[in-house]
Image 1 (tube, rainbow, N blue to C red):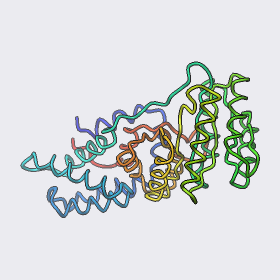
Image 2 (image 1 turned 90 degrees about the vertical axis):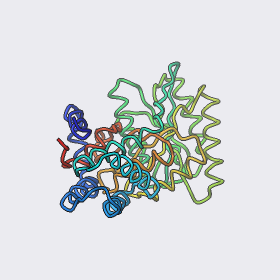
Image 3 (image 1 turned 90 degrees about the horizontal axis):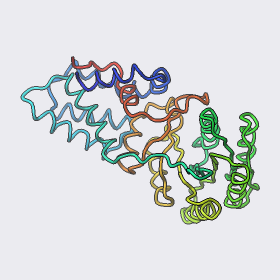
Image 4 (image 1 turned 60 degrees about the horizontal axis):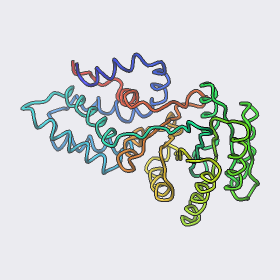
Length: 323
């Protein structure tokens, strides 16, 4: 059985396959549909083919380094055979893309077995941090966990009230920072509340200003310190929320945050609004950070745990399976 056929078999068993196909519809048009057009003039994995493939990968926002790596590996793989069909070239391509993502093993989400698990959500204004906090709260509540918010994005106008409003809708307590105040003070209050009330998951919506990198590093370092003083091992997870529609610009943001704090994972929002689905591979290859969740729509349930096989099948759906 070919690799794409295996992906399809696994995908058809997924409960959330419709959400993935809908969420990656634009990405499939940029990637899978364009690849499929190449079969009509396919004469082997030659320089012309690899040049066109590179363009498609770049348009999908895989990035030049990752695109070159994929093309080099595909050429080396296809050179092992005297002739190669388009079907099998595509199967090898998807298999190589999976290998690039899996080259560095994903780290797992850390949960505190002895009390509150503290999760810091970081990211620039407009990345979707506050909405992501709400969607994560709903997910954890459905798992039977108690959740509280900390509104520590004290510098963005309306951010505190926005998270507090989500708290009312979801019946999740929200510990609010003071507008233009110290975000770390809000996190201290949140940690103390969580301990007193036996909260399982504390979601901290933090400030994410990039205007001054030194200030950003100092703020994030302070937040980490105060967490650890209040709850042992905290923060247990530091997740960067990235707007997928920003593409390579988002990757640049991620690099700055990765230099400033000990990121443990990425949440990619607004995937359904972009044709640049390749950013997933670029992030993993360059930063070695797992993509933990992806936003595939506006509804709370559209924030899905990232599944590599479902992702690969969704962006390539329609490619001939090589059988």
